[in-house]
Amino acid sequence: MILDRRAVAALLLSFVAPGGVFGQAVSKLPRIGILESDPTSKALESFRQGLHERGYFEGRNVEFEARWTHGVVATIPKLAEELSRLRVDVIFAPTTPAALAAKEATRSIPIVFAVAADPVGSKLVATLAKPGGNVTGLTTLNIDVIPKRLEILNELAGGQARNWAVLFDPGDASNQLLLKTAEEHARQLGWVTRPFPVRSPSDFEDAFSAMVAAHMDAAIVSAGTLTIAHAKRLVDLAARSRIPAIYGSPEFVEAGGLVSYSGDFADNYRRAAGYVEKILKGARPEDLPVEQVQKLEFVLNQKTASALGLTVPHSLLLRVTRVID
Image (cartoon, rainbow, N blue to C red; front, side):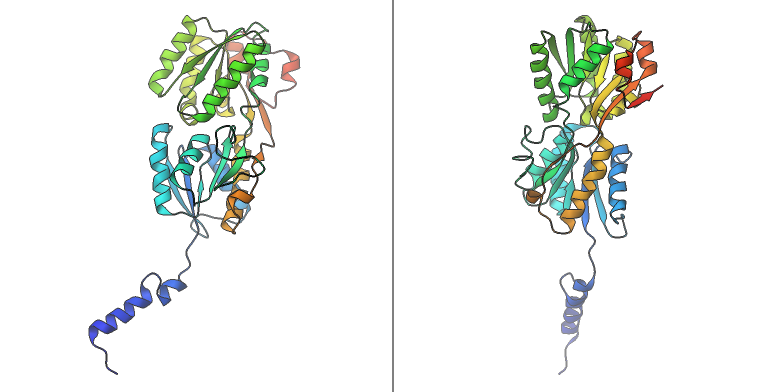
């Protein structure tokens, strides 16, 4: 039988095109979509470390499709949609806003979060034991520790903090839950809270100026996509305003902030790699219970305390897990 040139070309194409015999022989590396603030994130490096511990290396046996928010919460839904359209094998969306946006973008691609403050309250999962749907991961318990934060900062301020500022991002569901919890607990103690919303870095200076004008004794600064990305600027404003503040993650204290009490974010990112591994091996998110944080970090910046004229009680110093001089 003699084939003309067009028939021969069509036959060859069937071998090399996707789905052809040769195409089927080409191995396709699993792809992990990443929805994070920026590529220099220390916590993200912990996620990579967790993957390495499990034998996964970028370019060797897994690929990354990363989208960076650079601290702008409003960009997250669009970036989540991009990852959904790419049909990656799993999306690592570590924060509450990222995971919520990913969940909205896809109901089929598995999603793993790492530092959701309250995954049930923010409606990421149905319950911790049985997440349901396509989302699972780890929680920091950052909402549950709000009473402890109030206690720590009040003790550090000499027991005189009665008027509390809460700096938060209204666009971050976890920040909204933090505000509500802080208000409820402070009310039980007879203290007063006042919300100071920030939606972009341009709101920061006005927020602290308003705190000073309102004679706030102390401040709780929420951890989130916006605030962590601008940690240095926020701690500088707190120092200039001379307002003792407690923060929702150690990054702020490392940048010069006074004190933080929170789950160990880096450890959660590292452990989140275990969820990704299980999913790549066929596990379903709905069958993977949400795990709670294993480590709580109490970090104090001694230099900042001295600059604010605060004397750290010995009883408090004994409970600190890390001191930054």
